[in-house]
Image (cartoon, rainbow, N blue to C red):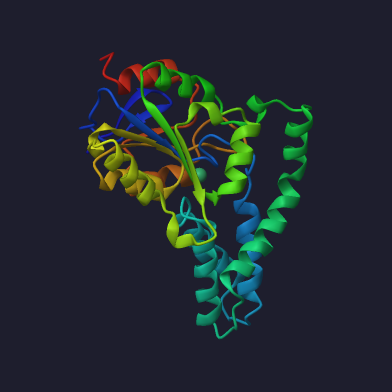
Amino acid sequence: MTQTQLTPNIEIINANLRRGHFKHAVFDFDGTISLIREGWQDVMIPMMVEILMATGTDESEQEIHDLVKLFVTDLTGKQTIYQMIRLAEEVEKRGGTPKEPVDYKWQYLDLLNERIKDRLDALKSGSSEPIDWVVPGSYDLLNALKDRGTRLYLASGTDEKFVFEEAELLKTTEYFDGIYGAQDDYKKFSKKMVIERILRENEVSGEELITFGDGYVEIENTHDVGGVGIGVATDEKNRVGVDDWKRSRLIKAGADVIIPEYRETAVLVPYLYGETE
Ligand SMILES: [Mg+2]
């Protein structure tokens, strides 16, 4: 595989990238469309480090931090509960008595809610606009795909009720033919299941699928069925340029293309759809 640049910001990782019409497109939500939960890692990681340090482990705080960052990142895109299941295992490994993963999940969601409450309130009251809380260029991209007759789906590891609410606040609901999120019974949902269902119900092969995601999981799942995975290495804080950590994880997961956000939709989409050289 050789790497080439389509533009200074769009990196083609897979030299054999298959271009053409895509009938179905799957989107991750947080970090891929929505920025409402921006900074969730800065809530989850310190919480887990604190819990693991409290086991009395002789590892340094830096070592624990690195370990946590790695497993949190690798599980990004899966439902939150999987990160908490892993936390419980790590507590146990260090001789601690873990809480139930679901209790850790609620502890985390309470902390995260503190961080995002003002954002949700501002969107609800109209003091901020949906465009303030989406990855730049999101509406252009969704419109460009819809205009080409591609059916769009949202699949998120966040609890479904939050995804419905936040998709609505960002005025994105109408774009999607299906919106899927995490269920209380976590075995009933996975992005893999969503992808398989789309392919099965529409009797299409993975080659007609394109996925946009900032997480390891959706890119890997797409790669596994032969679809094209666009790694959205958004720097969620600065909203411009590539986040290097995300980029390297996404490439490892099998991303075919790396983009920072959707500011160059007018170049990217015609290229992907084989309309330009
Ligand atoms: Mg994401």
